[in-house]
Image (tube, rainbow, N blue to C red; front, side):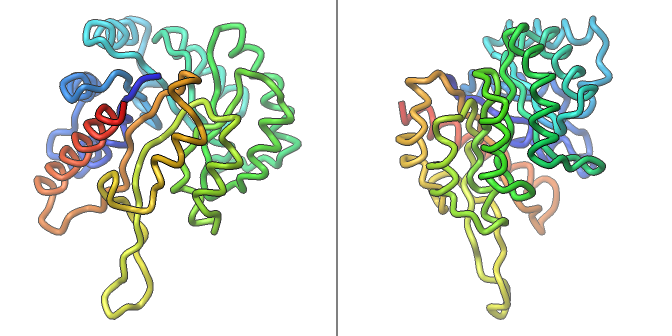
Length: 266
């Protein structure tokens, strides 16, 4: 088991709101400086255009910094999964996260099982595990139907219990249902706050340990230390009214706090 950081922890600093967005190398170096052991390149479209030489540079940079790499994408069509299997081979990655749905493809459970039964053996042959993330577009029961239907040790669940709240699924229930199948954990805390005038709520991120995530309960259920499951820091940090500098500063503080909290929990 190792603790790491995702591109999602740099969401605003790599966005088009950043005057000078961080590069992938910048994020790798920052992760190492903060004490992270893994970096998950998740939903980071530029990586798909890297040629072999540039991918080799990323792999070498991560190695020199003492970091392992993971990848993340969306979708389960053959072309998409084959692209990320190729990238995984080039980057010495053994875990790829994906999601069932994309903007133009929303497979049912039967179709998803068929597609993944074709793709997962290729991942297994390469020593790569594919993890499907829990999130609001797909019921957790349906996600588990797919995982059980494929029935491979190289297909599992990327657990992010906060995502499923928008589907009115309780995080504690998502953790309990998925625990035996988890291959990766996204660690982010979350909370509800009342909107002005008490008209509804805002559901957003908060510093780890200050919200509704039962981190201790999740770890007790999943047992990542025993099972070699990496824990990856993410955030849902709202944009700050004071602008980019304030947002970027807070994003860094949240990341530092989260990775320090995880390292202290050992």
